Image: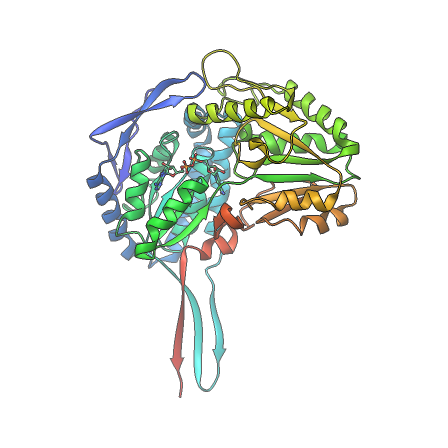
Length: 469
Ligand code: NAD
């Protein structure tokens, strides 16, 4: 590829005093260099966002127009940006291109979303209005699994509400966000979107910085807690979208052949590197063998390879620490008596490739069931008593999403309603859309993204009370 990737600060291309290597996970080799922002450059980005806020907040119609124009850029350049995403993230080019198209869909949705002004009283004594005001500068910090789309989940509502932004992607996947900043330089006024890149410490500088009034963070639970602590002294507002360990519970009337494709798809999408992927499956004893066999068959048939190659369904794991972690969790389960019904280990050769793995004869208390694996390995857990299965599904600090599967959809919905999580699906999983609030219970997050509720997270409520007395 070899392209010069620059940060966007105050509407201009900015290089940094230093750079860091970005690895192509399909080869394990450094493929590109990204700017390593200095503290002074972060200050400049924050100052620019602060200055741009004064005008940007004033003209709602201009903001809507800009978001629509940004959506058009995403649609028009989806393959070009998709290639950058595949290079740094590993996902197949078709999926990467769809991620960019998805970014356009989200931008369009927010461009049309109402910013309500509600009159809650209008009588002889007073007219009382409740309005939603922007907050100022938003610091946005994103992870490496869907770097572009998750950045847009923040950018679109934040900018629509009248805020400006400094965006920092993960050091594993900085290039697509740098490109985003570049392609939007002609669409957004200078300072409205600044994109800076660097290591984890740049994120910490942002959360401690005096300028932002809001931090919108997506990433791991451990970092989310640090972000919340860093925000506290200044009482910055936070939205935290954190990890998940989503259970899927099959009821005794589920048909393994009918649900296997969807279960597999929702567990292995993006190689399992999805916060709300299925991460453990609870199956009644009578269906257990059939479900394991059906999922193992799909795992063996999955085409794993370089995301740039035609027909590849699953790329490499994104980065070495994650690749090692998935390997460690799978080895731990097998050492503890689990059976690899499919896969079970890394794939020989360069790059961070791992066999799609189905683990049978595994139970709660094993790390891969209790922790978030975030990779292409799925444990299938037996149960005999549904109440016990629900208790085990809920017996975790996580609470992002979950699903219940059965032929009697009403019964499945009743069980789904008992899951302690932000989204409970019935006979599907990972059905996300711009109009649905997405967020987690417990350690999976604070606040939500998407829909009007996500938009409100980038606003402060203000009461305007006009006395008539
Ligand atoms: P991570 O927490 O390691 O990093 C996320 C971001 O935080 C990166 O940009 C990183 O540079 C930055 N960061 C690191 N230390 C920081 C600090 N002290 N202060 C501020 N920023 C800091 O997460 P990751 O490994 O990139 O992503 C994987 C995790 O993200 C998984 O747990 C996954 O479930 C979660 N995730 C959640 C959602 C959701 O919407 N709930 C979506 C995608 C991913």
